[in-house]
Image (tube, rainbow, N blue to C red; front, side):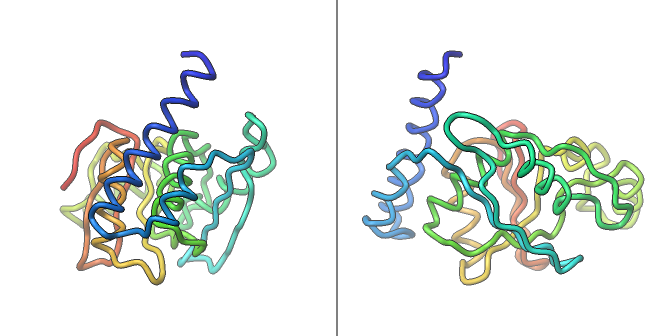
Length: 186
């Protein structure tokens, strides 16, 4: 896929997601306009609930992913139980960036779970029916999040509207799961 085709494809996703949410009344028209504008930088903000760490970083600029920023993101999204780190899939970061833009919020993603080591995932899976034995968290392709000031159902609808992967809704645990696997919702 050529770079220009990829950019057009991404813009189409932004426009489609933003238009769907605007029609649903979830974002204002000015917010939709800001989503439609392509910029030369992509920024993400995170707060890790387990470690208390915060990160706000530009991870992409002028057509390139920024290695130092990716290292910082991989660190904050590490398995906090084992301190194991795995590179987070770049399409997941791009999805989060688009999601943050569609929701028109500067607030950080609160991390419930980013990368999970196989050891951590096995323990969680054995103790909970809601943890997949072959979770995409183990591949750096999934994250469980919430955003302060954004209703969980609103976050869920915004993520579903992107049509970029899986979206799980866990209101009892106060988070939404997003991944870059096949498009599905539960």
